[in-house]
Length: 116
Length: 118
Image 1 (cartoon, rainbow over the protein chains, first blue to last red):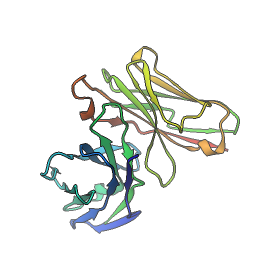
Image 2 (cartoon, rainbow over the protein chains, first blue to last red):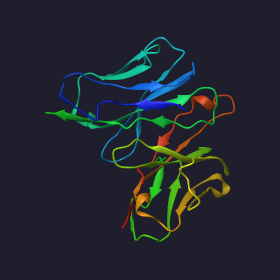
Image 3 (cartoon, each protein chain N blue to C red):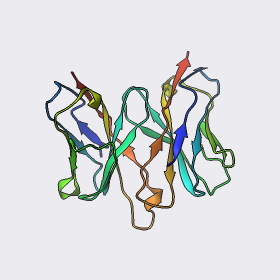
Image 4 (cartoon, rainbow over the protein chains, first blue to last red):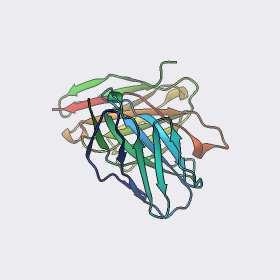
C-alpha cells in the first residue's frame, strides 16, 4: 500500500518570504499523480498543484512550485512571496495512475503560519 | 455553481444515537467520495460512488456506516449507534470523469461535517 509522509507538523514563514514544505511517499508503482492540497480554517480542501510522475518538469502555479525527485520519492512544495492568506494546513497526496478507481492517499499535513 | 455542499456543518450527538449527513456534489459530477479526517491526520478514504453505484468501501467503513447516492445526485452517510471514536470531520468530494481519463480526475471538496460524539 502507498504511504505519504509529511515530516513537518508545523512551519512558519515571514510574509513575502519563501518556504518549502516537505513530502515523501512510498510506492512500488512507476506511474502516479502527486498533489498538494490546502485546507484553510474554512475546512474546504483546495487543490494547489498537481504533478504527473511521468513528467520530468516540475509543476508550477503562480507562486507555488514543486521539486519532484522521483528516484528519492520526494515531492516538496515551495511557496514564494508568502502571503497572509497562505496560512493553512497543507496536505500532500498520492494517487495511482494505473486505475481510475483508486482513492487519494493523504499525508498527515503541515500547518503553515505566515507572520506579518 | 456553488461547489460541493455539506449539511450540517456541525453535529453533536450522544453515544448510541444515529446520525445522517448529506452531501450535494457539483452539478453533473458523476463521482462522489466520502473521507474522514480526525484531528492531526489527513483525510482517510471511506467510500465512493460513480453515479448511483457504490464502487468501493474502505475497511474503515464498519457495519455501522452506510452510504447511499440515490439517483446519482446527492449522497447521505449514516452512522448508527455512534461511538466516541466516530468523532471526526466527514468530508465529501466530487469529480467529473470520462471513461478515458479516469486517472486524471480532479476532486472538489466540501467544507465537511464536524461530528462530536459525547
